[in-house]
Image (cartoon, rainbow, N blue to C red; front, side):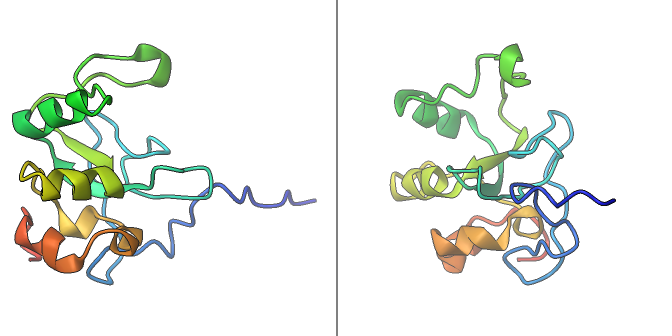
Length: 135
């Protein structure tokens, strides 16, 4: 007997990045992603759409803290180690866009940014801050 698939679990075989290619991992140290699998995958249970792979900066971390999301302080109960500038982290698409509009968006890795980000963020905005060679 096979069990039905969990509808909240992403399908790794079909996940694509904003360039239309297979999604690559964003970061394993610290382990990122809504599913903490290192990838910016999403599913129905991910209300924030953690799909933008970013190289966080001090300016962005300060911005996020002011907006009520402290990404610096460790939260072990959520398997969250706290971030430092330079860490790769899957950000909510809407927060990245908010930071972009405020002039403090961190660079992104397009190859590790899920195509679902394009439902919120224009590709041109992501590409303008691309940190990978795919741009």
